Image 1: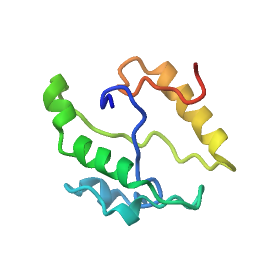
Image 2: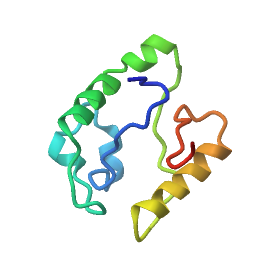
Image 3: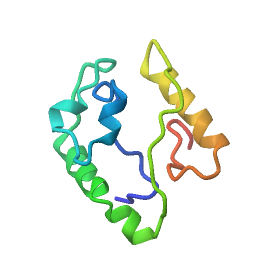
Image 4: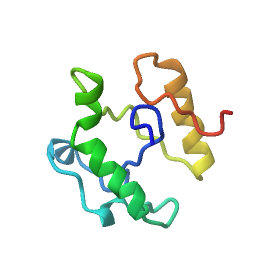
Length: 105
């Protein structure tokens, strides 16, 4: 498991207000439920999110001024559309830590 480059998990549906960006603890596993996919994350993914949320990733790699930025509200019809849009942002933003674009070999 490579915390720096592997695709992580994010509670998209839970993050429905600006106030939630001020929270300092990882949301509960149930809060990662995806309405789009009608499923929750696995125990393994939640454990990995706990590791990443503890800032061990940033402490280990020395990344300063870390933050997650919601770039836009993107209504999509399926996961493929969402992953395509995410890949466009990752490909165009050289400062993005997430270099794993879904579907790219």
